Length: 539
View (cartoon, rainbow, N blue to C red):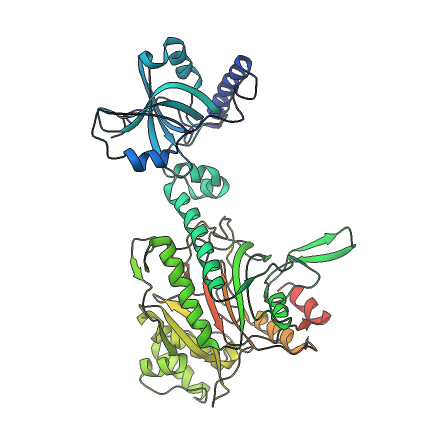
């Protein structure tokens, strides 16, 4: 048990009225002035330039965390951390210091070790939230708590505002508006940041192992493209022209393929001026990759390896734990099924691209599947597939050969040109990968309001089709690239994000849907001005 955690003496402000917070701020400002008056040089005061740290708290925990109670090591260490607990008694004061990674150690400030004046200053000047440097012997207390018996100490950075109540959960609004507080008081927030960094590094390592090059494409564009979304518009003073913030990196990556970079990827920021809620941010992260001379089976192999390697990087194995505590195994060879074939098996009757539309409507009515307004054949097939097949998928599964009306920009299968070589990866009956609430991820940071539609409205589909038909082909031939996109808040118009895809996962805070296509629109196409105006128009 932590000796300092029994009864924190400092008042916190989580539930205090605003006036009390202002009063605490005034008291802390007065303490800061005392520190500055006492020593105003760069090595002292309220914010010294540096402090003589010799050990990390996590390193001491790793080496001496199993000490027997009331043990002395003889090791002198200098450490620094934020005061998150404090208990001041007569001749002995306790404080818990927390490092940036969340590891903690107890500081024991005694009259015998530091003297009367220094102990009195500790009681008067040190508050919750302050960064403090302490130096002394590494010991374990009578209760077995790893501690520093302080012989000298110094304020490393004086906190002006009080910390929130560490005993209570922060509200979602507080977490979103004050991410720094969330990182201070909640272990899961810090773990999410670390996991995201490990995932990104694993993705880059896997791509590098397959000969992919990472590039950076323009974020400010004279003509937005690569997706159907309302862009943010800004103005360039230098060129006296309107520019658009990137909504997708697709077109520039395909131009890289045209130029001869046969394996290319980018982890980038995209901006879409649409709805926002706790799982959708107008600014979000996306990974998109292109590979020449392969098909959707090659991209499926790559996708599986990317996700499995990321799981190992975060969890140490392909077994990951969802936010609700459910364990999930991403290992082994993932199944690959055809949308029409799997639907036929589940429905007990053959369903093909040639099945009459009236038969599909009758089957939907018999099963209680809602028929969307103004339906098309491929859309209804998808709805029936989600009703019959998707709930029964318990392992990562590649669903391939979507209806041509749902993947217009992909190469057709043989012999049926009504079924196209495209697909999504489905895990535990939801599109891969599930996202953590936050990373933001909402791109790693959050917001609130109305959400984006889970599937594109009819008008959006029409805009996509018209954009494609009004593209001008590049005069330069290029290999047909296979594409892989991984977006934190959605994907291209041809792939549907189901509501169940929003389930939380501890694996990644930034990711939402993996989209697999064997061939996207020909690289290097440039939308015409009419198409750009149509995409930019509201509605």
